[in-house]
Length: 321
Image (cartoon, rainbow, N blue to C red; front, side):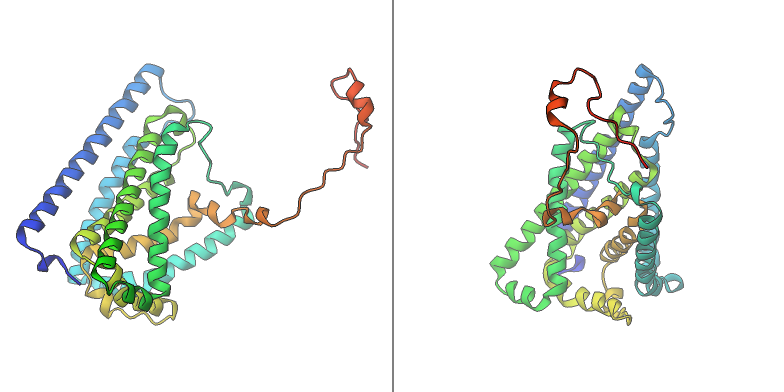
């Protein structure tokens, strides 16, 4: 594994400048979106029954998240108050417990509220250009992590050829950029459209912020801790398996750079908040529609009378007995 210390100074400086420029561009985009939203409010007046300023909420959450990440960096590097044990030995089980109990409770008691609240009918063009790169990038990266978890030896053998390793790393980084670009476009769409703010909520903003942390930290791993597909399979897979075996091995994960640790923590945090967000909808996706039989609709009325009827409600009225 090649970490930050093993890289030449000019490469490190280049990556740092790239991160600074990316942060400036992101801040500028947020500012432009905020001014545009304020202009819409001035022109059209405040939205009825929807007084929340989601641009301000998103910015505040982003700033708070930056402070939390910085605090985690200091705390994890110094292991303040056994923070490493808490984050990697306790928090995973807390996250899974919240996920399981919360999902069951919401499905049992609020099943009809489990929805992604699709906004495609409200706005479709920007949704397409944001949703496609985001979902494809995220899906490929998810299955890449899953393969490294399920078949670590096969992946390590595949990466034995430097050409294959390089192709895999570049492809993964490209899909990570795709997910980041899609997320930025989706956030811009959500915050700049008057119609979409009517169906937004504060948990949406939290999800956006956590996804930003997850994707940006993943890109940071690709830049500063190279060949992640190999060391993930050889180092993090044993840790994750030890978590599922209820005997977490913290030795390897404690030695990881702080941005790798933040990436792991944010992944568990996403699992924990699933029952409270739109993520819940993928757990109740109607996949049984693929193999279930066709529904048989029986029409009990006289079709001939209905075709010739001049009344608005033809046929005999159905009554409950």
